[in-house]
Image (cartoon, rainbow, N blue to C red; front, side, top):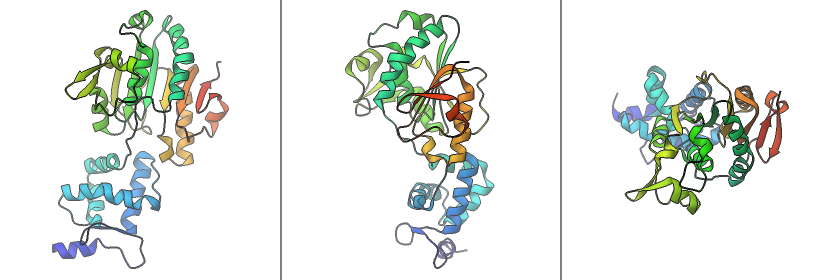
Amino acid sequence: MTQAATARAGSAAPGDPAVPGAPGGPVLGAAEFSAIAAIMQSDARIHLSEAKTTLVHSRLSRRLREHGLTDFRNYVRLVQSDPQERAAMVVALTTNHTHFFREAHHFDHFRATAVPWLQQRARSGPVRIWSAGCSSGEEVHTIAMCLLGESRQVPGWLRSADLRLLATDIAPHVVESTSRGIYSATTVEPVPTAYREAWMRRFGADYQMADEARALVTAKVLNLFDPWPMRQRYDVIFCRNVMIYFDDQAKAELEARFVDLLAPGGYLYIGHSERLIGPAAARMRACGHTIYQKEAT
């Protein structure tokens, strides 16, 4: 098939919604969009409405170029036959956006209420905190700085505690960024001066999280809808601005799993436009805007 014929094969049928690229570029037809949306729903439970057609076209056009393809029909065929490209497509269509001290009221509550409770917990056992959907790590490193405090000295309770911060995301490249803990000067602007001076170090033109902060964090690739490897309860879970990409059934399932994993009295922080639904809502009490505590048993 010639290149021109291949391009025509990827064109939408008359009347189909489609998004063209540059003149003569690939067209994302309705059938191809539907196939891509079905894979995202199956593999990551991410719901793609037709309103996302332009976004899908923009993000996947690069994948087409990398594979030397000129139409979305052949790209869909590739994804359906190649598990590695299928996973790469899911990652490409995942949104990674966050910043330090995002939704600051969560960290005000965490410092004032959760941290003293965690100090008590640390006296008798391990303390575990999970940043689910961690993106490039600003959230989990904000949590680490809140635990470490504004002094340059690691608090005594933390030096002797069995405390771990787990950071997970479906996208390997942002998990790697979390592990490195290197951020641009612009990215660290929201960090209060005291925290920045205590727990960030100059790294050329950038900043890197101090060793003491990075030592608390373990970053792993994890699809939230796959089986979870964790075998013990978690005291605090942050999953913020992640569930907005799921339909209600997926949200309810995920929230129920979070509540099951939480220790009695543990805290769950979710995004500013999210809410608890389904069985999870009956097992948690609100203790602030999008902050919930599991009922003690």
